[in-house]
Image (tube, rainbow, N blue to C red; front, side):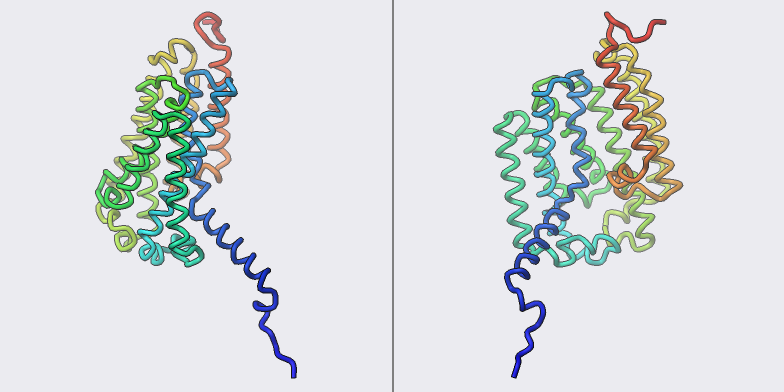
Length: 319
C-alpha cells in the first residue's frame, strides 16, 4: 500500500530554503529600503559646499547614507514591534511583515539590535562627530517610538529633527561647516512633508483615525491645512534668502536662478496632496510623480552647473 506524502513535505530541504528566503525578503521589507530617500539629505552639505566633484568625499557621504539607512531600518523594526497590534487593525499597515506574521518578532529584535549597534560602531569609526550625530538621531527616534509620537506637534517636529540631523551629519562626516540657512531649509521642508503626511492619514482613515493612531485625534483638517500653508511658505522664503544672502550664494551669485524650480516643486507637491490625495508616504510620491522627479533633476543639474561654472571671478551670466 502506497503512502501519500503531502507536497510540502516531499522536498524538505527546498521547503526550508524557500521559508528562509521568505524571511529574508520579509526582513528587507520591514526595514523599508524605499524610505532611504530621506537619507539623501546627507548629500546637502556636499552639494552646497561645491565639493560633490571630489570622489573621496562623495564616497564618505555615501557610507554615511548607508549607515543612516541601517540605523533607520532598526528604528522601523522597533516601531513595528511596538505597534504590532495597532498595525493589524490598519487598512494598509496590516500587510507589514511583523503585523502579518511573516517576520517573527524574536528575529526582528535580533536584526534591530544588529542594525543599530553595528551602524553606530561603524559610524564612530568613520568619524566620532558623525557617530555622535548618528547616536543622537537614534536616541530621538527611540524616544519618538515610545513617547514623542503620542504628543501633538512634537511628533511632527521630532520627524523634522531627524531630517535636520541628516543634513548636519552629512557635513560632519566630510568635516565641512554647514550654513544655518541650509539647516533652516531642511527643517522647513521636513515639517512640510510631516504635516502633509498627517493630513493624508486623516484622509485615509476618516472618522476612525484616532482608533488606529491616537495622536490623530489631536489633529483636524483645517489645522493641518493651516500648518502646511505656513511651513510651505516659510520653506520657499528660507530657500530664497539662502540663494541670495548665504556665503554659498555670495560665492555663486546666480544661485537664485534655482528658486522658481523650488517654488514649482513645492506647488506640485501641494497639488498632489490636495488634488490627488497623495502625501501619506513622501517617498512614494517622489517615486510615482514624473513631473516632480523632472523638477528635482532639473534643480540638481542647475545647482551642479552653477557650482561648477558660476563664481565671482568667472560669472556664468553677465548683466
